[in-house]
Structures are given as C-alpha cells and as structure tokens.
Image (cartoon, rainbow over the protein chains, first blue to last red):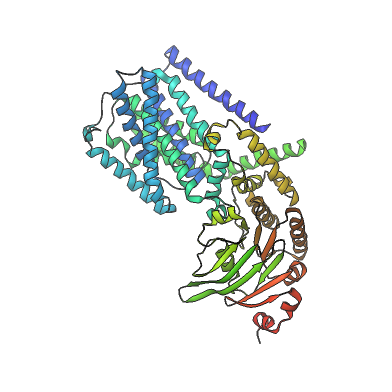
Length: 322
Length: 252
C-alpha cells in the first residue's frame, strides 16, 4: 500500500521535527531571535497550506488571505481577552480558535459568493480590494481598538506552548491533505482543470468553489488566532496586502498544489530574513536572490529531469508488481 | 413514451437563429445520429439539451419531465451525460481520478468524512476505486490508471471522455464527434466500443458525427440539420440518399 507507506513517512517527519524543536528549546540552544521566529514559521505554514487549497487545488488566485487572517486574529483575540479570567486557558484558546475560524469563514462566505463568479485576474483584483476593505473596517471600529490596535491579548501560543501550536499546524495540514484526497477534493480539482466538464459530470461548480474558499478562510482565521496569541498586540497595518502576497509567494514557490512544497517554502521564507540578519546590509538583497534562485529552480530542466526520473522509477515499480 | 422528447426547440444569438424548430424523439435503447454540414447547429443542439444554453422556445422532456432551465450539473444528475467535440478532460488529474470525479454523485459520504477520513470514507472510496477500475477495463484503459490524463495519446483521451461520461450512469449519452481526428483503424475500434457499451450499460446514445461510414454503420435513425433547421429524418439508408441531404453536404 503506497498510501500507508506515505502516511508513515510523513508521520516520522513530523515526529522528528517536533522532537528536534523540543530538544533545541529544552536545552536552550536557540538564540532569542531564533526562538521568536518558531511560532511565526508555524503561522505562515498554516497560512500557506490553507491558501494552497484555493490557489493550488481550486486554481483561483486570491490576494486577500491576510484579510481572512486578520478577521480571525481579531475575533479570536477578543474572545481570549474576554474569557481569560472566566475559563481555563486551554478552553479559552480552543474557543478563541473556533471563534476566529468561524468569523473568518463567515467573511469567506460573504466575499466568496459574489466574488467567485469572477475568474483569473478579476478575482485576484477583487480579493485584493476586499482585503484592504477588511483592514479599513477594522481600523475604524472601536471594539478592535482602531488604529491604536488591540493589546493585552493573553499570550497562549508563544514558543513556550510549542506543542499546542505544532498540533494546530498538523491539523491544518491534515485537513487540507485529507480533503484533497476525497470526493469533495476531487470535485474541487475538477473545477480547476475544466469547469465546463466538471458541470457536465454533475458537479455544482459554484458550490465547490465556495466550499474550498470558505474552508481556506476558516484555516487562515485559525492561523490568525495563533498569530495574535503569540505577539499579544494587533494593529490593522500588520495585515496589509504585502502579507497576502508573501503567503502567495510561498504557495507559488512550493509548486502550486504541492502541500509539502508550500510548507518548505513557508519555513524557508519566514526564517530567511531573521537568519540573514547577521549579514545586515545585504539582508534584503540575499532574500531576493534566494527567491529568484528558487523560482529558476522550479522552472528549470534540473527539476523536470528529477521529476521524470522519479515518475519512471514509479511506473517501473508498478510494472514489476503487476 | 420516448426517453427524450424535443419539441419546437429554438435559440437565437442576436440575429442568428442557430437552432430553429427542432423536433426529435429518441426511444429508449436506440442509437441515433445527428448529422449536418459544419455550422448546422448540431453542437448548439447538444448545448441546449445539456443546459449550457437556455432555449428561447420549445420543450425538452426527459422521461416526460421538462429539463429546460435546469443547470448542467442537475441535468447530468437527471440522466444526460455528454462528451465534447474538443476534448475536455481533467488534464492534471490521473485517469482513474477523472472517472472517480464522475462517480461523485454516487457516493454519499459528507464533508466531515472527507476532512477526517473516518467512518464510511474508506469503504466508499474502495468501492469507488473498484467501480472506476471496472469502467476503465471496458475501455482498455486500466493500465493507464495512474497516468495523467493529459499524457494519454489522443485516441485514448477520447475513450476516457466516454468512460467518464458513462461513470455518471446516464440514461442518455450524447457523443459530440467521437471519431474526430481518428484514423480509420481507430474509428473501427471506436464503433466496436460504442456497440459494446450499448450492450453492457444499456444506455441510449445520440451522437454527432461527420464520418459517414461510422454513421451508416451503427446508427439506427438519423436527424439531419442544416442552417439550424431540420432537413430530414429517417433510417440512415434513406436519409443519406435523400437529394436534399446530398445538396446540403455537396452543393448543387
């Protein structure tokens, strides 16, 4: 069973990563700087994987992912603030995650239903606009603290509670990976590949577009709550379109529709600016160079040859088994 | 009662009357051809039957029930499946997955099962795999199950499209130029396949085709369209020798 083998390998990878981080944290081998980027890496991984569902599997370019994240972050943060004295912290956190996810999902429905009638560039522009609108609305509301921001959010998801954060990352990855490998996920990919044919085999196209969009929004909302619980203060400016584009870059570099690739890209691109801090002046230059090299590699003959070789090995194996 | 009844069907695009006053009656289990010169409105008629276009006038009855105004997905669920003139496969998905997409409405596990992979997910997935493999076997595509659909040779892509349409378990199968771009050998093979699926799946077939050898070889009844209107209908031998039809195809 190829699937079982894959599952075991992925499980081992996850366990090794978890153990490595725990050991590094426990032994105090990490500098403050590196410790401070552990949770952001997790947050960006969640965001990249959730956006992968929309961009990679649904095939629609969305530039408003930071908008959904901000809705989730604020909703979750408010829940955490108001329940911190009433509920035990783990219950409060779970409630906050659900609240953040649900608010983002509702936003996803409100935006998705009209917007998903558009295609390609139009959809990208409108989602970009919606992201900015969400930012402006948060900026002008009093409950969110306006431009001053929302502070004193209980710090429930810092690197000290890495286990919780890691479990959340796993949940997001598993949800997306499982979904892709189910009748609903196949319907979503069919819509991506050819929506006319998808309709012709009985798949209600707009329902599945909205479904993928809303699930991605929910997961982004959860990522927002983790983000809020890590830094303790939220300001609308943090969620501008740069952030959306950063997430998109991770998905694209990971190779659209490749969950593992998106995770690796998220880790590298989040860690890189911090790791490169020592080279001070050349930091952004190096960041750009790495981006370009990754992009070139993604389109190069080297990768194609590697993939071809892998495919050939696979089919030979299949033949031998048969 | 006929399986499909089309009455006075018509549609205009601006000033162009693409299909005008089309009447068809297709009996269950029959194999009917729809022919006509290029631009006669054959594919438009298919698009009307499958809900891609909304007719300006006329009726379409499937088993006595009107399907006008339904969406393409609903019409497919009602029992009409189709293939396309220019092949439309799910090109970045495997051959097996292409068929499994078409089985979508025959399995009923819900979204929660999809996300969590619990409950009847495994059982139903396994059944889906078996069903899909069975259909692929009929079309001799089983050895390509894991290949990407876009990597299949042309003739096999056409076959896969028919396989996918059949997986929706239709009562009526619409084939839009199934032999287009095929060499004579492939066409003969296709004719055999069509005969086979008729027997095996008991499906009624309406097909558009330009290859007269195929049409006269397997169709039991023909409708001829020209400039959107019905020119003739009847048994293939009579229709293909009808002077009006010859004129439409070959000119005066």
